[in-house]
Image (cartoon, rainbow, N blue to C red):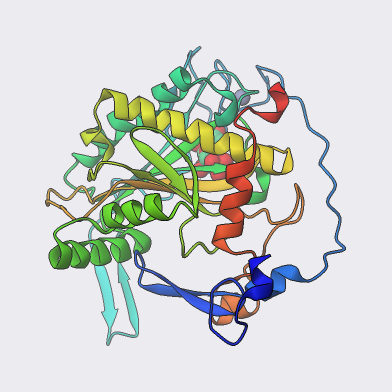
Length: 355
Ligand code: H2U
Ligand code: ZN
């Protein structure tokens, strides 16, 4: 109702198109809240839910099965990790570079790619796993981050999960990946720079100051526990983009204590339950941890967090495309971060399949 009494001549971010700044990347996005009010006549149907068996003889991630490269998985229980049979980065790439006057530049890149099975149970997804089971995934992340990150030629370890065919995920078996590289990739490089600069200017991490401000405002929070907060960042680009931020500023998951590791498992489950409940579908996303580089440096400004980039917009089938203006100019959204957070926050905490 307050919108009626609002002075419509005065700029405000609930009614007028505006740009929002992302302090982690130093980039801007366009928000068009007035467009979210236009009528929508598209379909809002639910997709037919496929029921998957606990074991699929044709799945290359299920225990005991043969993978595409000819190797066979052991009869594992819980988590299982293997080197990607089609690794995008290789550990034995020779050093070298090409530079023809700055117009044709190429550098050799070494790396390691691994696939992490989250559970032996083919039918599960993260929101359907128990916190104890997800904690095993967190423990595996710690082991792999420590082991891979300590290699001389690895300077950055990217842990991530692609979920859903819509995100290009090849297999519904619950799993994630690690791609680790000798150089720090593009997104973490931006965040390294902005977090370092902020820390030097303020003596606190960018994300701890941001988190404190969000906890005060209460506008974009979704769920939280003693160790982590899940929220829609002010600068979110995807309709239901979220971040999980550690309450304590730590540079990487190895600095988390035992209860914080369980806290990470707990919030991963809580947030993905909200996601599934939004359109009563197994919600697709790309998610991943952002942590300090593993080049041996100290990064006091780096603050552990996890990004979730989901493409769904209005239903189990209607997704957002980053096309046109977004490809050529700047990413844009209609529904505001505050509206998205409110919708997610108000959803039940129990998975819709268990209702
Ligand atoms: P997604 O998480 O996007 O589904 O990718 C699965 C990875 O699994 C993909 O990188 C690897 C692919 O190379 N893979 C294997 O390592 N072995 C196989 O037998 C099939 C797929
Ligand atoms: Zn499987």
